[in-house]
Image 1 (tube, rainbow, N blue to C red):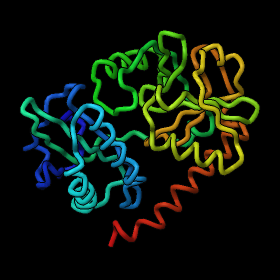
Image 2 (cartoon, rainbow, N blue to C red):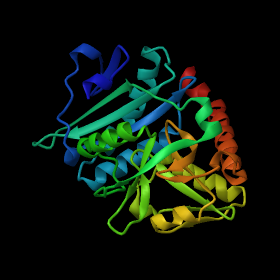
Image 3 (cartoon, one colour):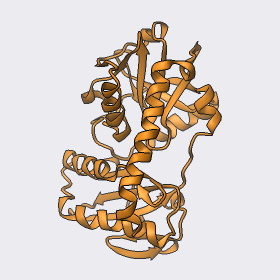
Image 4 (cartoon, one colour):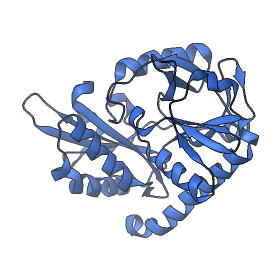
Length: 281
């Protein structure tokens, strides 16, 4: 965990410390929750929704961080300033020890964003059999992450789409996934996936554009019928998929997907314009 910190300063329980003196908590999925927030032009993108989800995730594992939420929000702003507003992702991490004491940290992490050509051509993905327990909670699961990373490396793929015991595609290993069929969007029901901040925004945007959004369990046989698909997430934003195992798609040329991609980019620009005054001044 310490290796993912890339900027000189981080904030630990409200105090500014240097990276070298940080001692992270033990990485146990049962007592660690986190959020990753993208920072652009000094603005933490959609930070309000990320904080709401952090609180909900902590509730699900009996870790009440509400008393710390105002301090964490203030520390996000402080962290951006003391590190000279890097254009990277920051991570908010909260963990509870055996005595019930909650520690939190805020720090910038290694950030990998898709190259422009991936938005133009689409990404390669694979199917991966896995079931995440308590999918609505954003908790650390190093075991699953390591297994997925190994499979991605072996297949030279960008992302893995998780398949449950019913052969249904639920979500990406670090993203949400949407399918397009006849200009309608299909995605897994909210109780089956992590409720991604980008996912929520994309659903709202699609409906505002008059695009039907259908939340339904999606059998992997739907790969033979859909017109295209894409993932959503903090780092990839809205990213078209060109391949899932042996199935190929012209997702980056699909009019419905292009409309959503453009609308989401415009939403980000509008959000930054409205909030940069609060975070930069």
